[in-house]
Length: 185
Image 1 (cartoon, rainbow, N blue to C red):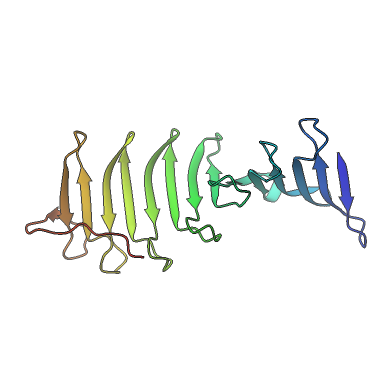
Image 2: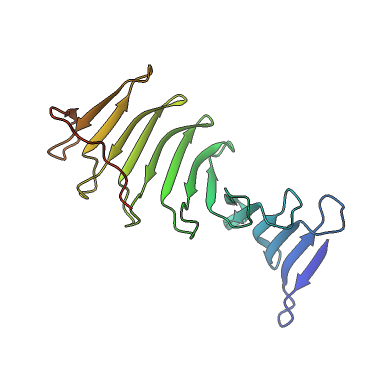
């Protein structure tokens, strides 16, 4: 283990550790004295960080960051339930640090997701899952903050289109041909 101290204050700022004994540090613990702030880990030994652990009050792990492209750039963050299971994952699709998709989990399976498809900071797409399959996708095509179009999928692969013309949360079958909303770019 190699400690690094602030030259002016003498405070511990970093601990470098070689966890696999290959002579190269692969675990970097960023410190505020004796308090762990963040740990960065190169799990596969390619010289790029794969895992970012963020710690809060009481040295409690708050979230874990990872790189979906495995290129050393964090673009998703996992948050855990008290039992350690995944509660939600926040994703920055543009890889700019701005979260635009959040997936919610129960018992290790995604149950729903919310997404800002046009980058305006507001959710405009909602997904619901039933077990391992997508049950419905709803879209806000009017920018009112609630879904007005919904695609509902049957377990056998069928699909129906529903609309909420009044914006009150009551969907009805589309009576005339409605093109499925596409995410706005």
